[in-house]
Image (cartoon, rainbow over all chains, first blue to last red; front, top):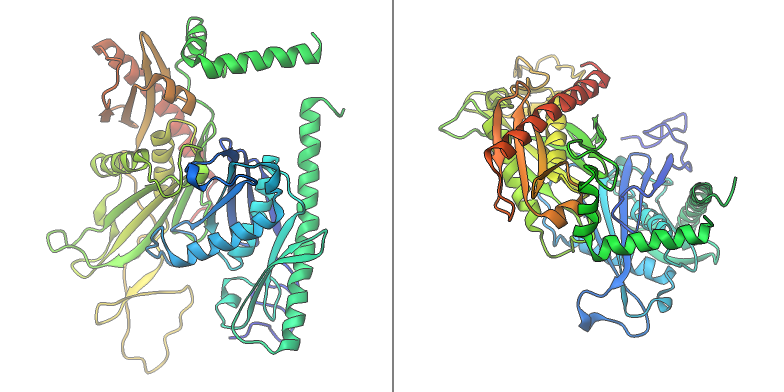
Length: 238
Length: 302
């Protein structure tokens, strides 16, 4: 199967280094303290944040910082075939852990001791890069909830091609997912599958980091727009 | 009024609402209105969008006020049961993921989800809206199993009504994938332009393809809360928590009763109350029928 046509276009018409179309919306779940929908091409993810609130089980309470919990799940109709997924699915548990630790690095947990922050991510449509889309959605939802963060965390997945969709992902080539704290220009998440020579790895990582920077520009615009809307509603800006 | 005084006044009302919810509501009910300015018998703004999930064979998103349900139907081939060789089957799964409400915690499954799942299945099966024979591919050999998955994305009361509307929308939007049967009886998907190679003696039998389901008597529902002599239609989550006694009436589009559900509760219903609920539901059915028709007409033609 040809992943890049002779004219230099990928299966979905993109150039090799081009990202998919991004779309994000804040405040989609009314009951949640913060929520967001994030779309990267056909991958669509909804995130909701509840907190900071009282810790459920007192014995897990941390005296000097907030407890961050995360749960990732995929809708049964999100992928091409409908697998019978149990809640304790290993892949879901692993991704939940990854998202939790990535977000924990960014949230200023020491400002909210003895509380709990819940992040729930649900994949509605999966077309490659779900892990990255979940982290981006979680960042937006946490910002929507007004929980203080030291930096915006964005994530992007790349292989030989940037921001791969499901077909390209399943081709078996390398898949590098990167989570970047953009202002500080530091990595919080780096995961790789398959085999890569070291020098190509550097290039692929740079590609993913470029993707993260493009996403953060988009996210910053969305957050600015949202704040402007809130200001109009409160009458603080005419 | 200065903005600070207005803010202080607003905080007092909010505090009263939290501390004495019943009195807060009764003050409104005395004037035949609810805190969101609805009259007692009116439902919230409802919308239905079809085809929201392209990866599913049929999908719909229904919103009643803030309550949001996303339904998807996926079809899988199965061998039909021996006592019903020309029928397919439907499996309903209603889930409330933790994003929908602060009351739903991960690891602790909510009773509400199981109850609504059961209610939905029984209404869909007993109303005859779906003819299981339409799900058959080849008698005795292959039939479709329709997995209906409904996810609650935002739980703000009247969950059953929104779930039923989304389920109906998803089945209305459902498109069967084109398939053909091989000689051995295996069902294989047929893409739009498969070319049969020359010398291929095994011609797959292409079935008379049905494109979509014909829906029979479509059920529509309305949930009401009972409190003393008041009947509140389409409750929000706050109202459901305070009043606690619900009645769910399911009627078909011609106004005949499909299902009536009053699962206990401290408020008792007299015959006249029941008739009032049915009248409210009859009015609601007309609204919902119009919404469904609009959504169907906006869909691309097959």
